[in-house]
Every structure is written in structure tokens, then in C-alpha cells.
Image (cartoon, rainbow, N blue to C red; front, top):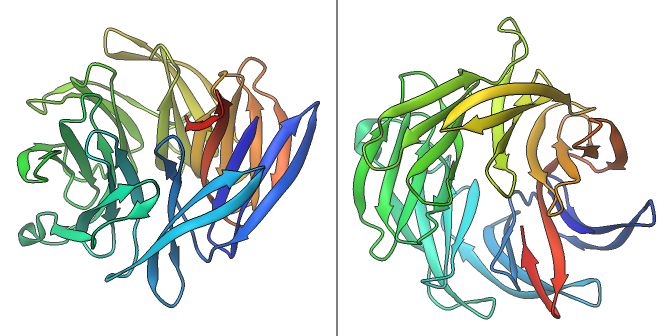
Length: 321
């Protein structure tokens, strides 16, 4: 198993778990990188140094190889997504109240970044996450300050409709289901996971993500297992990962799994579903947690980890889960 870790400091790392040992294979200097994604071969993140830059790279013989970069006008990016259908990298900027996109070919940025305001006329606009639907015909943009999910046409990037959530809940991240008909949303302020209809925005089901309602915590991120039977949601403050069984779009809480650290900003499920990997920002560590025993099996020290991806070698090509 190989993973890439990004962080708020000055490096990203490629690490490997093999024969019960964790090894750092390579690292690359990138200042204040955050979320990271891949198109299956190339990887994309951003650097927040003297200028805000998009960065693309690939992995060759277990080493990082930088491919391209593009300077952006703005203060930061928050989350990235990729459309294979349109060969397009997309991003949300929490601080600028914008989303944007750029065309990509073999890891190179082939045009200038296009910036779109996300309902700034409605007041404070904080788009925190965006994701491409399974059919890649729509892009969902989660706006945490407006309790809103904007659904954009993936081809034109024009806004098609708005889905409004309960006021004050603070939606942070979301996932499409495999059919593209439902959105599963984690809220930062109300610490809930919600299922909403992707067309009408109607509320279908919801559940608290906390072990006790008296806990001071913020919902962070979420991931499905391969069959969408289990949904995992991380809690910053409660320092747990809530495990839900999903039955007919309803949530049944099965357990709370400890993160073995503080402030799980990001969390992924390994491709073989053996591990939950938690990037614990405030305790400066990444922890691999066994999904069966809920015990930690590996801990890797890393200053302020912020993003994770798993790298899989299949038929001599890299893909991402």
C-alpha cells in the first residue's frame, strides 16, 4: 500500500506499508499544500507560498516528478475535483467565495484558470467542497456559510439549481451516491450527516455524528465503502469516526471509532477496506485504524497533515481511490 500525505507545512510525502513496516519513499517540498486528488495518472494539489499555485506531478519509480504549475489570482483553494469527461480540474475557494476550473492534458494546465462567483450576492459566500456526479453531467458545490449546495452544469459550469439545508447547520463535505440521485452531506456546525435528494433538495434522512450531544466538535469529512453499505464520518473535537450502516437511505449508527489523535481534518478508507486512515492535524500524525478491530496499527508523525490519497499500481498505471 502506498499513500501520499499533504500538510500545512513545507513537504508532502509518499509512504509505503509493506511487511508490517511503514517507509517514507520520497518527499517533495510544497508549502501549505492541502487537499490532493488524481486523474488516475497525474496528481493535483496546490501550494500557498508567496503566490497561490496549482501543482501537478506524477510518481515515477517511487519518486515525485513535478509536471506543471499555474499561478492563480486569489488567496487560497480549499477542495479540488476532477472531471474525466471534460479533462478539467475544478476547485473551491472558501476565502474568495469562488469556484473555478482549468483544462488539463497529460498533467499540463492548458488554459488560464476560470473563476466563477458562488452566489456572492447572497452575502458571505464560503464554498468549501465540490464534487463531480457519477455521470459527470453535474458538479455539486457545498457552501458552508449559506447552508446551500449549488448544482452546476458540468459542461458550461452554469448554475442549474440550489439545494438549501437547515439554517445554521454548516454543510462542509458531501458525496454523491453511485446513481447520482442522492447527496450525503456532513455538517460542520450541527455535526450531522444528511441524505438529500439531488434533484429537489428534499430532506430524506439525517443523524447526529457524535457519541454524545454534549461534545464540542465539528464534522469534517465522509467516505463510503465500495458497496455503499457503510458510511464513515470524522468528528474534529470528539476525535472519533462515526460508522453508519446505510439502509434504504436511512442511517443506523453502528459504532464510534477513535482516531487516536486530535482534529481529524481528513480521512479515507483504504482500497481493500482494511484501514481507515485519519489525518489528525492538531496531534501531528496520520493513523491507520483497522476497520475490524478498531485498533490503530500504524502511526506516522507528520506536521499538520491535511490531505490523503491512496496510490494503487494496476497494469503499470497509477489510479486513485
